[in-house]
Image (cartoon, rainbow, N blue to C red; front, side, top):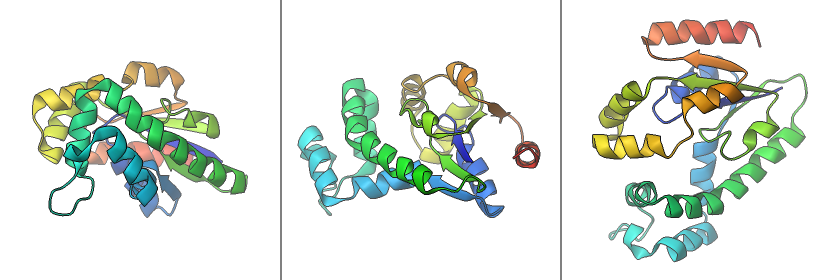
Length: 192
């Protein structure tokens, strides 16, 4: 069974994913896979040709992830360009995992943009980790050391939790403590 795990930025999806990983579930993390794909020479060249050398770190001449993040979240067209470069390659990776998977094993696809990328179609069940936007903003400011304006912009370009809830099979609400979240994850695992 393929379980899609998704949630907006700073929703707690990664915390849920790590918890499940510690319970020995097989997890495929789209962010890590996308990062590996984006570091391939031909993909880096495609990104630089679309975004220019201003996104490079001057000392290493490699893509500076913070500069790229700032560029794409300040301009929706640039975000769409980056997604058009990365998403098809990531989708293909996950599609191959599904093809090779056995029906009796539980595989978790940890994909922040599960619905936006169409990868929900590869999943038998979709779990959404959801939290209030104000909580997400506070988490991003603390975790990513960004300002409130950029945090709000990042959230604004993502599909809203209201829309995602309509598409998800299971919703894990994460507005409380870690203990409450872990308890909800345990209940979810009992039903797998």
